[in-house]
Length: 200
Image (cartoon, rainbow, N blue to C red):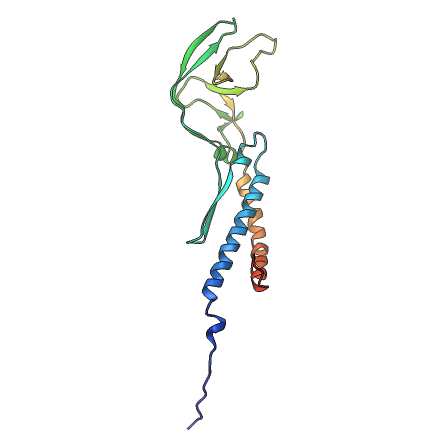
């Protein structure tokens, strides 16, 4: 009969393994999201800084998931009064119809307008004209005043259509950059944990 072999296993070395893995996961996720926010801010167009200021994130520690968010959306606007300025200098009070919310972040990332032979064109969906914000009172090429609308301290011109914009896929570029950096981020987190650093 063969001799019995007894093996003593010391489980004290792995008793906290589950908690350690979870702690590494939470820190790795948090570091990944922090870097993702930085990259998104670098990739978004800086024309108005609306997108740059709208970058944020949501981390769910219980499921170890996270979302990178960009909030640059105009809310729905109800029926509003405005002042129409005619080229003659006369003014008239008008009422503007309600406007649906507009997702600026999505429009920049995906582009706007319907592409035709002359490129992308935006047309009003329900109204007769688009209201386009401008910095100053409009004048024609020969210097004559044009009609415009003022509302809430802002100036708008009216156009039957406007040139659309090509997509600026800042979100795709940011995701590709972050994906390339993820292994190094997690390697640093694991190494910091292995070294017993307090804030790994």
